[in-house]
Image (cartoon, rainbow, N blue to C red; front, side, top):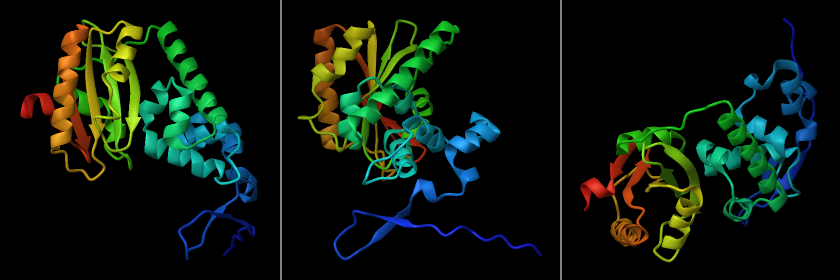
Length: 246
């Protein structure tokens, strides 16, 4: 029986809690055929995972984080649709703790995709209920960090813009009406839907969630661009604050 020997791999030490030591593989020590770029050349883009495609895009990691680890973390913490709709490199850099150059690469590639999609006559997603919202943001259900996204719609209930507004536990001091309605004005939206995830999978709204929603509903009335709903998702479940708590 033929046996396969794996090449010896060196390790790179990364920051870990005191008293612990963690190591990750360096990309250069992977077998040549297993590297993302070589797999792309040999098998085409469809054969690569999302994190591998992002690794090809970013090309290299940092002294603290290997490019494959960084790519996987970006997808895991930011979500697939948030990645595709990213348009603010500074916000992405701060939220994910990645170099601004990496964030610019991601935003530029996302913008290319959006422009090609529009030029090919692609149709925007349509949402008419909290269930539609939950299905649209399926990538958020398994995120490891709490994330708030704004879905900006036209008069036909089509999403014309999708933006990550904040990452981390929701707080009235973080979710400012200006940040929510700025994209609405920029993209000419007729209405806004907010959605955030609970990593625990418990989708019941907290008092803070309800209070923030009430404040933003009032702000929407003043702006003339209504907040239609605030949906909480997690682990395949969802709840509408507007329907269940108002």
